[in-house]
Image (cartoon, rainbow, N blue to C red; front, top):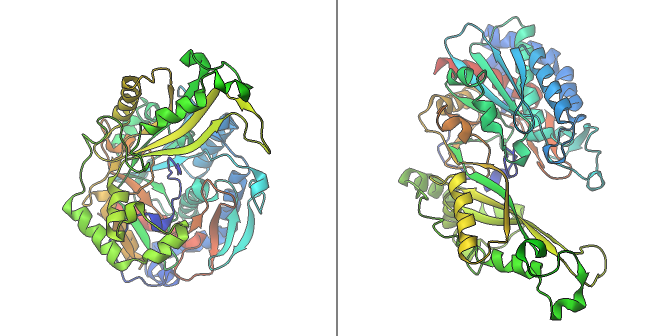
Amino acid sequence: MTDGFGNFAQFDRRAMLRSSMLVGAGMALASSGAAFAADDVRARIRAAALAQREASVKRIQDWIALPSIAAENRNMAEGAKYMAQLASDAGFTDVKIIPTDGHPGVFGVMDNGAPTTLGIYFMYDVKQFDPAEWSSPPLEARIVDKPNWGKAIVGRGAVNQKGPEATLLASLHAMKAAKVKPPVNLVLICEGEEEIGSPHFKQLATHADVMPALRKAGGIFIPASWQGPDGEVEVNLGSKGVVELELVASGEKWGRGPKGDIHSSRKAMVDSPAWRLIQALQTLVTPDGNTAAIDGWFENVRALTQREKDLIAQVAATSDEAKEMASLGVTHWIDDLPYNQALERLASQPTVNIEGLVGGYTGPGGKTILPGRAVAKLDLRLVPNQTRAEAERKLRAHLDKRGFTDVETNFSGGYDPTETAEDSRLIQAELATYKALGVTASLNPRLAGSWPGATFTAPPLSIPAGHFGLGHGSGAHAPDEYYVVESSNPKVAGIVDATMGYVEMMYQFAAV
């Protein structure tokens, strides 16, 4: 997952808030095999997963070789067809490619005759990439040695999100080979626009064939692989929402300045759309750029609960602030805040961020022009109880009130914040699963990144949604993205242990 949306995108583990509500004894994951072996059914499934290990690895590599990139309209029909085949091969039935006003989604069910239904969310699209920035070709999915982690697949989509998703599929292949029926019914929903803000995902989730099946689910999760070096994982109780957009200033829309690029000597007598854009941007935040100043932006923001503050305080007391700063390449938090307050800000504050500024000439040397057009790419992170619709409306009204009616707001995607109750069946099943496997888990009040879980948690579906999974990977949206398949760290899952993690999650969800 998108970052951005995603993001499920992967976000730096240390950038997420962690609680000190620890679950389990933190035993090495290597010992979890004994726990599975204690149950004949699980032992049979594990034996099948071991026998299928190479096929499971190859499934990830083959999938990486077919990149579906929504932003570039690249292989989208092919990606949906491939996703549908993967679902069918894993045992899903009635698999359908569902059209939307954008790129298609994929839907399937697995009726195992169980009293409980569990939902699974996939994305089949990936982020763009520049092969020149990679040390290993991004579509070749080579297996390389990652110091301190083990052997890993390197490729675009390896961890975001094809590696974890294919590992969940591996759990179903292993159960089929072991002649074990999953203990829950499954509903699978897959989208192809996560990396552009899921602009048509609600159409998919509320489709006449899809929504009735989703409503039967007691919870839904996206596969993840966020284990840290000590094997620890986080259970997220929510995530921020996001809006992605472009602000565009142009001479054509403004009625001032040039309609196209002209010689910069003319600046003495001609207005500049680039400066127009900068002036508009400056109104969106406080002078330091750190707090949103859009009219009415904070009127619906929910303050942190005491429970959330307590969790954050415990995180600050048990975390290594210096290591986190080093990992991010920073030496100060905003306003030189103490660590505890910086973490509270991370969880509680909506943001206005400039992703990129594009205008005029940006190549080597100079080029004396006055650009006729300038663009700012923005993302707005939202917290409870903000909504995407509210954010878009308030941003437009803010600009109009200040005379920037000509500055275009081109909204491309986004969704509301997500919240899932700590006592929900999904969260309790996740905690029980990690405990059963001897993995240390902590409650995370809110993921600072975003994924379209609000489509599930909000009406008309209103089901718990979150992230679950073992294993490790990193580099989402970046060069040399990777997913560990053979772990050299006994506390971190390789592909077989991660496969069994999904098996255990199904059993725990059925039992809660």
